[in-house]
Image 1 (cartoon, rainbow, N blue to C red):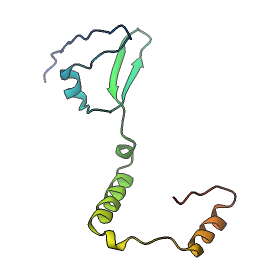
Image 2: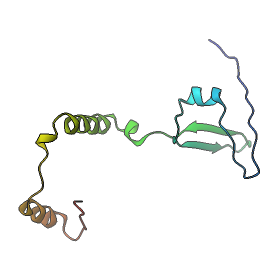
Image 3: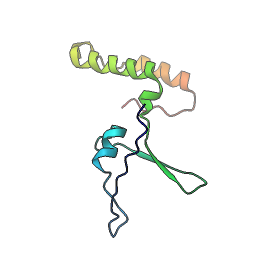
Length: 102
């Protein structure tokens, strides 16, 4: 088991911004536009982690949405517009909740 600790530095700009060092980006598997999370411990230590993707929290939902995306891409001819009857049924089921089908 490797217990070596890797330490890296980064500098704050005048606007308190910094670049996440490459070694940290690699370990956290960060990509552009990913979100990061800071945990401040009572000791004053700060832990930086990658914010979890909501789809990773629910693998079933993520797989289903992936399936839908692939099906739409592979079979655009199956897409259909929603008819007025279905819109009325949805509105009756949703009660006073506003539904925007666009």
